[in-house]
Amino acid sequence: MKLKIECLSAGYDKDFVIKDLSLSVNQGEFLSLLGPSGCGKTTLMKAVAGILPAQGGRILLDGEDITSLPIHKRGTVIVFQDMRLFPHMTVEENVAFPLKMQGVSRSGRLEQARDLLEKVQMGGFLDRRPSELSGGQQQRAALARALAARPRLLLLDEPFSALDENLREDMRNLVLQLQREFHMTVVLVTHDREEALSMSDRIALMFSGRLVQTGTPKEVYLRPESRLAADYFGDCVYINGTVSGGRFTGGGLDCPVPFLSQEFISQAIPFPADAPVPGPSVPDGPCRLMLRPGSLEPDRTGGYFLTVEQVSFRGGSVLVSLRSDDGDLWKKAFSGPVDLAPGDRIQASVRTQDGVLFPA
Ligand SMILES: Nc1ncnc2c1ncn2[C@@H]1O[C@H](COP(=O)(O)OP(=O)(O)OP(=O)(O)O)[C@@H](O)[C@H]1O
Ligand SMILES: [Mg+2]
Image 1 (cartoon, rainbow, N blue to C red):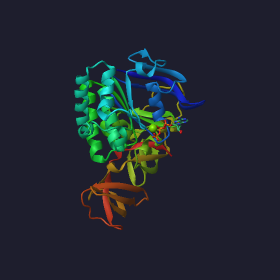
Image 2 (image 1 turned 120 degrees about the horizontal axis):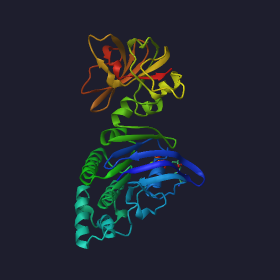
Image 3 (image 1 turned 180 degrees about the horizontal axis):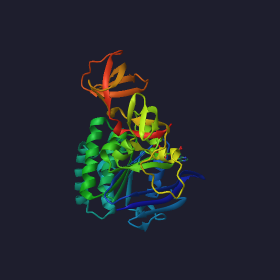
Image 4 (image 1 turned 90 degrees about the vertical axis):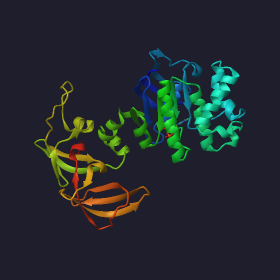
């Protein structure tokens, strides 16, 4: 089922939380919606599900305008952040409920419910009431209930937030497996960047009620169009420098100009509105080169020198703060034991071709 959101506005009372937002999610696609707390992710999910009325724009499912359809006619299911199971029903009855609505026989729906509850590792809690479950157990029962409905569009609003890392990994795999099996279109709201990067076909990044970038995980991580998007995925190093004759120099680096961010293109290159797509010619002037720690590699033959400032043990990895001789700070995680101490000198090379150019 293809979801198309066109210029949607929604909010509470007269305040718009989201305004003129457009987004498409293809049939069978897994899209993660990421963004800081309060930016409007849940509001968008509620508007798509029909819990909150749209105050402008349209929502289309497979081309059909569902903007004014009541919740139960939309064929969407949402696992809420503040999800509520039916308090008067047992866990098993809760999960069997959507199947009852679909007319599945009692024995058939209880069997499917038990099977799903087994899959979310809740097989031992069939007869409990929701009030007798922990937060994480309630979350898994709610997930099982959502999956039982076999929706063609599944909206998941932080469905794993109350789970510990091991369970979280199991539930992620389960959702991915069922998504592929039933060709569900999924929108997952999460705060967990790694979760979004690893699970999704595409990511939509939201700030203050608007989308700042949508793209594949690699595109949004490696090719951020704005500093907002770059910083959201953390650990950026911005190296001040200048562009001259198509080369970047600064911070001890000298390299051909790499990828240009949209922000650089729109601020640094004064194009007339009707000009063709910018070519490779980049105007000379000051700018900043954004790099991520993955582009820094210890290398005895490298010409980039750094001094260790801090070493912090993180269990599976060690986070090392390194200051380059030109004053740029890198925070790089090394896996396995690291024999480094503050004051140590490191020689490295930098994969400048991974860089993204931003305005100064
Ligand atoms: N029922 C409500 N009435 C009025 N304002 C609300 C209501 N629910 C949310 N808001 C406001 O709308 C804005 C967006 O909230 P929303 O719940 O969509 O954020 P979110 O992106 O889901 O955040 P989080 O990541 O913390 O869940 C916030 O400023 C919030 O305070
Ligand atoms: Mg929310």
